[in-house]
Image 1 (cartoon, rainbow, N blue to C red):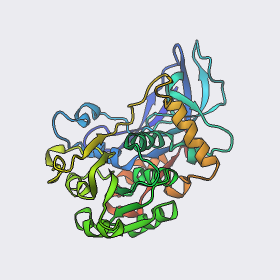
Image 2 (image 1 turned 180 degrees about the vertical axis):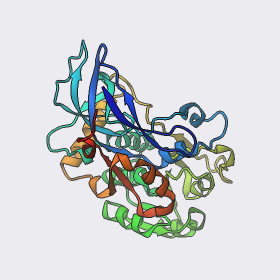
Image 3 (image 1 turned 90 degrees about the vertical axis):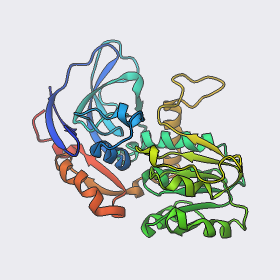
Image 4 (image 1 turned 90 degrees about the horizontal axis):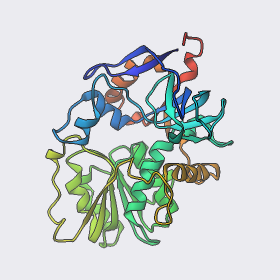
Length: 341
């Protein structure tokens, strides 16, 4: 079988290539893509290929590189030993942008009735942001600040609105992104660069500053400014992994104010549920779907563009030009249904 796949063959290059798909082996499943989500920050970094030595990025980015990890698909063939799925099941999984792909059954989650593909594609990022919100250990009545309102920042904002925070401050230089965050639960919006927002955060919190800050920008210059929004013993959550941490500065009072810095990575969850930690990938995804079904979260409203995978080169190369006009990009693989596979 052949599959049309999006590939970064080398730094700065985007191709759609026809590649072979092997038959599924033991406990493996052949899936056909319905819709996938572009993770703009991560995939842009991978396309540029600029990173410090020794970082996760150096390990992760190997050309030719298959971008993408947010997929809604349908099961088309079962390998031997598959017990959890049947042909025709709708699933979501961590998989690259590919028309057909093989996945282990343990890495798939059923998409329930009532959840659309354009909602299911958010499951991977919904898990990552859940990890960040949980690590922050927010208590009812505490205050939080989200710096950077791309797709991760918007998801964190919606989760925090469910957590009972008193002040939910969002900071970005895009008014349209701030308006969206206010629509979905933020209480205060500051349209300034992080380094210029300290006085506004102080004013909003009556001088108390916030308990938790989420830096979701990945920009090296933001970390030091974000630390200044915190009270003593505050928590600083890093959900944006800068590819050039050598350019980051911790800020002047990390030690003096006893600030905790928490790094979040999307794979840091247990494979098996235990009494000590129930939040497996499947359980986090189930919670996210519950919130969406009950209209307590809205992710379709975060989609700004729906494109054909065949236009991948144009899509990726236009990201820098379109700026904050682009938020969520859905790749519709149904547009390839008349092509040879």
